[in-house]
Every structure is written in C-alpha cells, then in structure tokens.
Length: 102
Image (cartoon, rainbow, N blue to C red):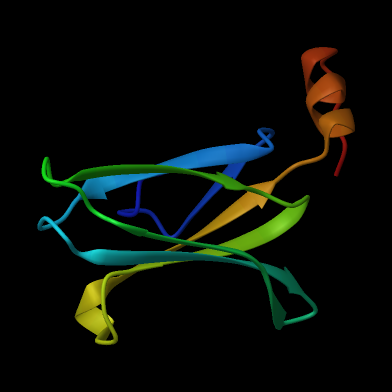
C-alpha cells in the first residue's frame, strides 16, 4: 500500500503492507470497516520486526471502506493511515464489459 495517498480503490480481497523499521520494533496493523461514519475493528495484526528491518504483512479487506492504521508506538508520528475502498466484483465485471455503473 502507498501511504503517501489518503485513499485507494481495489477489487482485491487482500493487500500487502510492507516497510522498514528498526529490529525488534513491535508493529500493529488495524483494519476497520467504515459504515455511516462508524468505524468497527475487523482485523488486527501484531508482529515484531526481524533482524533485516523489513516487514511484510498481508491484510484482509472487506467490501466497502477499510480504514487501515499501521503503528509502531503510541505517538501520532509512529502511525500511518490509509483508506482502501474495496469494490464489488460485479463492478469489475461491468467495467470490463464497458458498462458504467454509478
């Protein structure tokens, strides 16, 4: 995921979060579903960065808006956030046929 963007769209049921951090950094990834301005924690992943300093974690996405928070501490500077909008497969098929659905 490209955290330099505020949001992205996908048809995929999962995405990979990867990056670098100091060895032994405790990382946490939280995936929230957003419905009617309410966030519900759907999945969370915790792991410790290994000796290489590189981490990779596949995360599951729900249909609709997924708000993802990656953190390595409690400070705002230790967090990265992005919204991933997972589209339904029917939209993908319609687009492939050249049909526009609002």
